[in-house]
Amino acid sequence: MKRVVVIGAGPMGLAAAVRARKRGFDVTVLEAGDVGAALDRWGPVRCFTPLAMNLPEEMLHAVDVDRNALLTGPEMRRLVLEPLVARLNIDVRTRHRVTAIGRRGLTRGDFAGHPMRAERPFVVQADAPDGERSFEAEIVLDASGGYTLPNASGSGGLPAAGERRESDRFIRDHATLEARADELRGSRVLLIGHGHSAANALLLLGRIGVNVVWAVRTANQRPCVAVPNDPLPERNAVVEQANALAASPPEWLRVERRAMLQSIVHGEAKLSGGRSIAVDYVASFTGFHPDSRHLTEVTVELSPVTEGGARLYRAIANVTDCLTVPSVRPSDLASGEPNFFFVGSRAYGRARTFLLQTGLAQLETILDSLPK
Image (tube, rainbow, N blue to C red):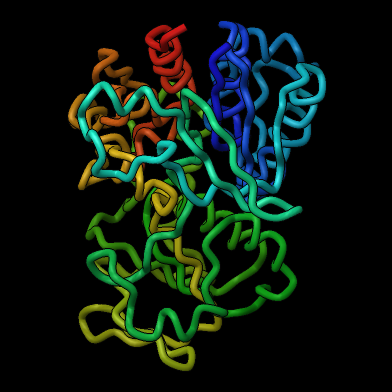
């Protein structure tokens, strides 16, 4: 029986485990924290898609949750993922942070591109509660996520001057905004970004009662991009509310357009164009990127644009909305390292067009291609 190691116990990682086991593989899931821990960063933000679009059928059957529910991240973890692990008896090793992957006895340069490389099993090293652990497997499915490390807040994606020194002022997820609501109330907050995460953050800051300066790179009166006739009502509602606030700001909001953070020193933030504002906190919602530090000894091809799979990026480069399902071939999902695959948002990296439903379909393609 071939062994599979899945990295990550989020929705895609658990789906990969369930479906690989159904095909007769011996599956172990390694999770850096607790099951679904990354979803807690969403805080009160709800999925744009209903639960039925986010899980395969056999997993939906195993939980007693409304299929049409738009769950928050913590609800997804608590009501869905944690019960699934118990009810489906999935072998998940929590608090096992994967630190390195290689081939037994081979370096990255040994037999690169040669079929002989696939004859050696993978060695997956992890930091565990009881020390360092190693796992061997013939197949590795990396579902560690594409939204792992926060992007910097300055111009061109670089850290603004002082960003590292003033890191205590920076908040980068909705859960922290919610948890620190009492501390934030009445303070001066610089909000950076104009994607869906920033839009949700703006609405949350408005409910908390914060004085907000919203810095957006675009010159548009309505900075958040709306999808015409958007079939996802939750996404449309968030964008419409944020854009309405930007177009006609209430007393607690000021919008700075064509604005990028240049520096922050002792609470004085300087924006492009010579603008200067005093802030207590910076809510930086400029996106995330994958963590690739465990991949130095495998011959994976990473996209120079998204840091996801290079071949998949070329296949989805013209996709502009997550509901546009790309047509991909098995070869588009290959990583360059035999029997190593990125699955879910990890395959997309920084690309903003990932949809769980699409990831599940691509997972099926990958599993169908695996050697039995």
